[in-house]
Image (cartoon, rainbow, N blue to C red):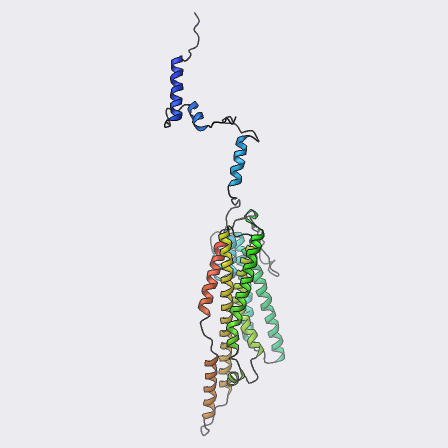
Length: 386
């Protein structure tokens, strides 16, 4: 007699159903839960029609749920995070220390290494021009022409330096003229454009930051210099040997010295303003920090420009007085020394009168460093891809 294959009894089936129904309502157990109970426990009142192990049909409920979840999630940056643009920008702000650290590191990033070599080359050229400027005193026409040419070269070099520094912070590898053949090209870093948010809010933040920066920069430069330049009258300049007034070359040389701090501050300010204009600093808290950092940078840069200009010009006036005293004829042994002593005393009194204070240096440096710190932090949060 042929036997039929064994089938589960009704009692066994009923017991299994009771077990699964109790599992669905009671506490789940890893060992007692059956496949049916797991389906019932994980499911809902609606049947989605999705088969385990297969891709849901497009346009189905599962696909709609996934689309809703994806749209509700914030957009995450897709590119790998790299700090090469921050290191490259520091090469221009802290030469030659930052370029030397990058070049001597075991595995420098190609982008950072490119800008380190370029910043070091610009530093060498700038140091050479500064040394040549220190040798010239335009006392005649030929020296005056050479001095003007050197001043133009320094101004052009500073403009190129600012362009390269801004490009490095923006993740671009701009090759400067005459350095194209000396420095090998490298792959530029491309910005992750999904992080941008250009709109009316970005334009408003840029307008606020730009307007506040211009006003603060003008006030912090003009207000301290107005009161100090009033002291440079003929009464105080004549005892220093400058009866014809303040020479133009002294003012130009002092401006070139203060232009170094101006270039650094304006570079940081330009990067902050460009980031606000492009909508890079997100969310709103970061953009607000960028506006505050731009205001701090502008105020600190203005105070540093005013302080360096005053100190540089005062140093040249002191040197002029020493040259006047050294070139003056000493009185004979029988002559009265009252006139010579009065000249020295009058010159010292004039220098004490026009001596600049040091009240601008500390607040200017603190505000500028705070603005620079905000910039570096915001730039470190950006994403770039090769």
